[in-house]
Picture 1 (cartoon, helix red, strand yellow):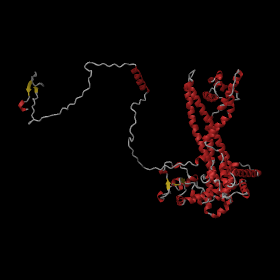
Picture 2 (spheres, rainbow, N blue to C red):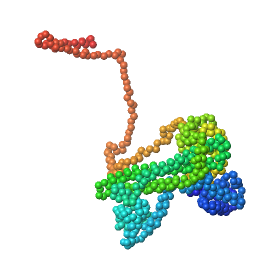
Picture 3 (cartoon, rainbow, N blue to C red):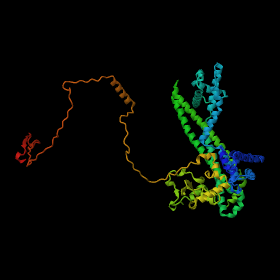
Picture 4 (cartoon, helix red, strand yellow):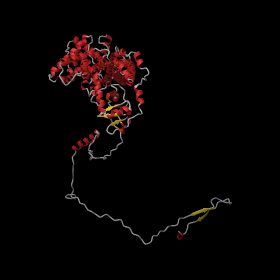
Length: 640
C-alpha cells in the first residue's frame, strides 16, 4: 500500500526524460530515491522509499523550486532535487513534514474493514498450510502412525480455532474428547482414502464442530479450558478505545479552533503576519486538521465494530439457548439438528476474534498517529498561544455554522448555476463535497485558511462537483468565477503537498491518490432532487399471456396423471341401432311468439261485501245472566 504508486510516479517523472527509454528513466528515478535515502541515513534519519518518492513529487510540483517538467533533467537538476528533498526530510521542526509522514504512515497501515479481514484470514490460512499438508499428505498405516496423525488433527483443530494452546495438556484433552465424539480414531482409515480437497474440507468442518462443542460446554460450565470471554473483552475494550479517540479528537479540534482564530486575527492585522511567519501557523493547522480527519475515520470503523459485536452477542445467546432446548434431558440427539448450530457457534466466535484483532489494530494505529504532532509543542508552547489569543474569540465549527444558518443563498439569483438545499435534495447528507467540506472561497482568497463550509446555506453544483461555503457572501463571490478560485487552490496545493490528500485534490494530482481513497475517486453520489410529478399508463398495454392450462399444485398434477393412466387401460365401446343408422343431425328454425294484448271500451270491477257480524251484551249488565244479541252489520251488495 503506497501513497504514491511506483508506476504512477515513474510515469510522472518520465515526462522530464522524454529522450530516455522507459527502463532507463525508471533507473534514474530509482537512483534518485536511493541517493536521497542514503543522504538522510547519513544524518541519522531513516526514511522509507514511499516517503522519499512523495517528497520528490512535492519538491518538483512546488513552482518556487524552479523545476521545469517540459525539459530533461540534467545532472545539476538532479543534485538540486536531491538537496531540496534531503533538506525537507531532515527538517524535524516542520509541521508540513509531520503531516506528510502522517499521511504516508496512515495510508501504508490503514485499509478497509473488508480488506483487512480478508487479509487476516489469508495470513491465518498460510500459517496453517504446513500443518494442513502434514495431515493431508500422510500415508499412515501402523497403529503408532495413526495415533500420531490423530494428535496432529487435534493440534490443527486447536490452532485453527484459536481456542487455547496445543501444548496445554488440559486443553488438548478437552479438544480430543470433543473430537472423538464426532470423529472417532477408528474412522481414520476412511479419512485417509479421501482426496486432498475432501480431507481439507472435512478438517475445516471438524474444526467448526469441535469449536461449537467446546463453546457449548463452556456455557454449560462443563469445559471451555483456555477460552477467553471475547464478548466481555470486547464489551470493555470498545468503549475504552472509543473514549480515548474521542478525547484525542476533542483535543485536536480545540487546537484547530485556536489556530483558526489566530489566523483570522492575523488576517485582520497584516503586521502580525510578518512576526508569525516563522511559526508556520497554517502548516500547523493543516497538520492538526489531517489528524482530526484520520481520527474520525478510525472512530467510524470502531463504531461499526461496536454495532457488529452487539448484533453477534444477541445471535450467540440465541444459538446457545436453541442448543440447550434441543439437548435438554436427552441421551442422544440427531447430528442433523446440532451440527448446524455448532458450526454457527464457531462462525460467530471467529467473528468475535476478527473484531478483537481489528479493534487492536485500530487502537495501535491511533497511538502511532500521535507521534506526528510533535512540532506543535516546539513551535507553539502554551504561553505563546495564550499571548496570540489575547482578545480573540475562539469559535468552534458548530458555532460558525449556527452563525450563518439563516443567511441562505437565493437560487433565483443564479440562472446558469444549480444550488442544492436540504429540503429539495433527498441524499443531501451523502454528497461528496469538494475540499472535504471546507470553504473553497475562503481557502483561495486567504492563502490557505481552512474554515468549515455550511451546507445548510446551499451547496453549489458546478461541473458535477459540489462546493460548500462558510457564508452567503463567500458563496456569491465564488459563484461569479468558480474556475479562478479552483485554479488558485490547485496552485496553493503545489506549494503545500500535504493539501493534496487533506483536501482530496486527487483529480488534479492523479499520481498522488492515497490507497485508502483509491476506490472513492470516481465514486460520485448524484443528488436526487424532489419535485411533484405524476404519470399515467394504460392498465394492460400488452395482451394477457396467462396460460389457463398451467397447474402449480403437484397434487392436482398427480390426480390428472392418475386419471390419464387409468384411461389408457380402459376400452371405449360404441353401439348403433336400426333407428339411428344413417341418421344425421337436423336443425329447424321457428319464429318466437309475440306478446299481444287487447283493450276494452270500459273498465269495470265488482266486489263482494265483507261480512261484519257482532255480538252485543257479552260484557253483562244489571241482570245476573248474560244474554248475547247477534247484530249483522254487513252492507248490501248494491251499496258496495
